[in-house]
Amino acid sequence: MFDDLLPAEDRDIGATVISHTDKLRFDRSRSLADVCYFRKFTPGPSASPAPSTPITPHHDSYLRIRYIRFGEFDIRTWFDAPFPEEYMTIPDGRLWICEFCLKYMKSKFNAHRHKLKCKMRHPPGDEIYRDDAIAVFEVDGRKNKIYCQNLCLLSKMFLDHKSLFYDVEPFLFYVITEVDELGARFVGYFSKEKRSPKDYNVSCIMTLPVRQRQGWGNLLIDFSYLLSKKERRTGSPEKPLSALGALGYRNYWTLAIMRYLRTGPDSPRLEGAFCFFVFMHVLTHHQTSARPLR
Image (cartoon, rainbow, N blue to C red; front, side, top):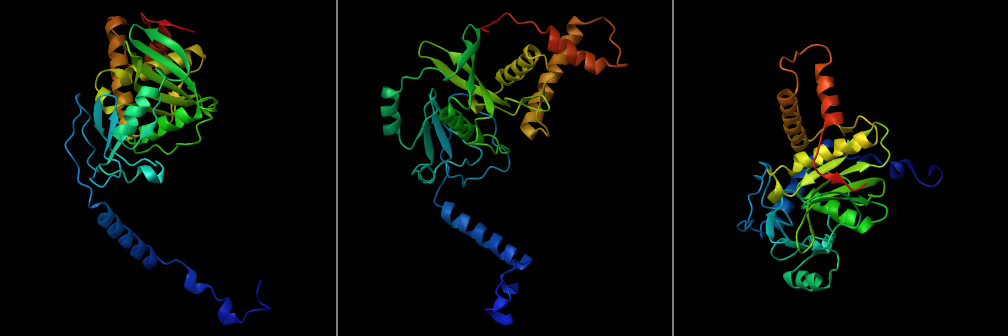
């Protein structure tokens, strides 16, 4: 467009094309900058009162937020989350999170003041399930946007594949809690699209590390299939599954098949539509002593 204004040598943009060598130089410089910037941070000892899931092999000591204080637990994070910049340079690498409203704070002083003022004692949604001390709340991403965004940021610190943080309006979040005299304490959650063209019943699922290996994950998966049953849909998690997701679903279906073999016919045969029959049997004949609230 500048043919009439500039000579040929001034219109030449060949020198601005990014080459492979330029990309290598940029990656090398970024790696050196990351090492120099994060070298001053050193990981401290873990103080989780409950056993935590082992850190994944690719975890390193250069996380900007290395621990979160969640209720009575100090939990070591596994991955970085896109918190606002002012929360990325906290002195001791510890972020304080309210276990009821999920608000995040930079210091113990701020967390203590918030605790005195926070009136929330359960997730801001409809309680749709209760069984003694276990309660599940349905939270609409459109009606409770801030809470759901905070929930996504929290889960990102333990899920490598999670990529949605702020666009939460198309999703429903099902938060499982443990109820005591103080309130409904957050344990884990799963989310799903309000309108999924492929009938996916789980988009993202996470249990806090200090709550893992206690059956909460299987309960969340089971609850997602019970919702699909109520909606008269087959239901399936989004694919492809992450490594942790595949591990959780493999464990769930192993238990489901073993439950069927224990209560099914004496001589089941691996022919025809056996696997489909097992799936439909668990989906349509699962019984629970708890009562759904709606």
